[in-house]
Structure formats: structure tokens, C-alpha cells
Image (cartoon, rainbow, N blue to C red; front, top):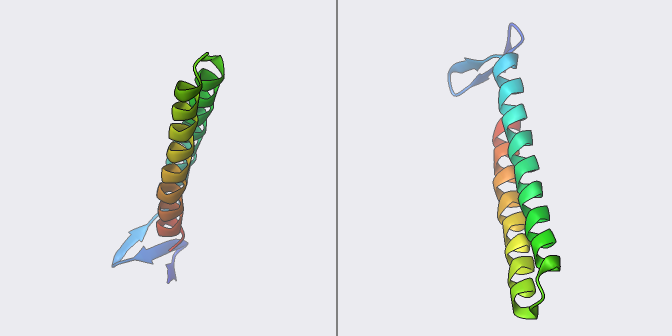
Length: 80
């Protein structure tokens, strides 16, 4: 429901300004997840030992996947 340019969400009005701030926070979190994964992969390529490289690549994949689930849920809540 839209009232005076604001959404009604569970009985309270959410202003467009608050929506913009929440979207910016989600985008910043997504950027930090990406940078964390990039750092883990960079460190993995710098290590001489195969098992350590594999472990860092696996944790980068895990970080990416967990972050994707969290971001999907956050964006779903913002869009509802």
C-alpha cells in the first residue's frame, strides 16, 4: 500500500530516505563480501602449499555462498 509516497509495512510508514539508506547498507555489505573473497583468493595464490591454497579457496567459496544467501534475504525483505 502506498500512502503519500511512502510504503506501509506492518502498520508503519517507511520513508523513501530510509529505503535508500538500507539499500546503501546492503550494497556496502555486498562489496565487503566480494572484497573478502578476493583477498582470500589472492592469499591462496600466494601460498606455496597446495592444501593451504585449497583451504583458502574453499573458505572464499563458502564466504561467497553464505553472503549470497544473506544478501538475497535482505533484498527480499527490502522489496516486500
